[in-house]
Length: 141
Length: 141
Length: 141
Length: 141
Image (cartoon, rainbow over all chains, first blue to last red; front, top):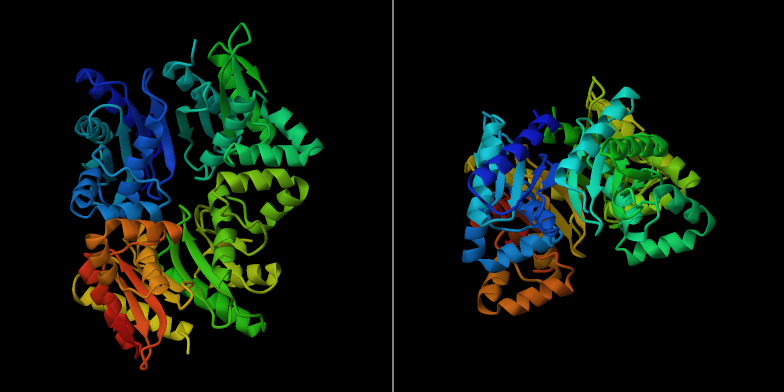
């Protein structure tokens, strides 16, 4: 199974709904497939343009390494040079903080990742999780 | 005025509707703002992952230089080194063929660009134009 | 379905067997998954080290754009600046000549690509095709 | 002497056998020659795609500097800026942690390196060592 565009749209809409309900700042949200390629992206009115790159970087590291943002952050705190160098090896495209959330099916298989940026990292991650679960999939935050 | 997320969504949906009506191959479509930054992107199921980069490159050159894809292509045919060097100066992110369509308001001001990739360049441009016009804006193809 | 490591190994071995039977020069062969990521690579003794980058580039463009090497080459002959710019958009990683062969399942779905380099482009493509077919899959050359 | 493809295959297979026996997560393993160029790479089913870049980075730093992953890590702990700058000079391709293992012949000459990624760094290094020794060569871990 792979993430359909229909499901990717649901994830983004529901992430934004969650954010509006919680009075978060304007967000950007991206859905990547299993190979780290973009299926869908949206930036809410008022979100700064660089939020694309941050949201993308959060999701990209998560799906390429199989480590969600929280795990990448823990590793960066413990061993900064490892994350710095992994980032170099992946073309400088990682952003290792919460808000990069892995998407799994009911058997635990990784289908892709959602990346959210715009509010605090923890709020970003909560919005991503809400979107993934609204699409009937499992979030590893 | 700038392109709202709501309008960007309309452009993409209507571009895809146009493509389905014309039995085109699966498409990818991006909407860039007037600074060349992504507002929204969607890739239809079955479109290859690299279609993001191609659709983006078409729209990026169009909005950054104020030349739609057809004009960039004409210039590339007449003066290949100019387009090659402009592309270098723009970080290698141009794709100078039809399918990069400029979005203007009713007074002619450039608001952004739509890039489409997946079918022939001319069909890609037609789908982008249909989307822009469905959102009540003017397309320079 | 995705290409298993077991099947990727078969493709490479059978490509090399085909090449030895046809007295080709030493080859390098790579198998990429549906997202353009490496599953397996081998370089025969005597093949130059840069054959990795060439084999990879052939397969990468094929799977990212859904165009096998022969179609990329035809496009490059007809419209050189398009392929030059598509290559820029894809990070300079395309090599648009035969030897980048798309792998499809029995329903026509793209599962990945095989890239071969070391002999003439046409021989490279023939070896890739032999490997893909020996693994029970369909080659688009 | 250089590492033959036959021996590179043995190293990878035996590294994977060691990992399966120790119930490690799915691994990626690469064998580089003495110039830092890839001879062979395999990614086990279930290993994330970015494991190629990490495995490669571990082996690349090891063979280019003649320092195995453990020595690179010690240096990064003691003198982070040295490793950061060495990495810059090497094109951002180092990953300075265990799992990058130098391959030597019986006289101590460096023939190449093996890089493994997927489980803990120490387990990755143990799998690489097992593969190298199964091929009759000496591992500097």
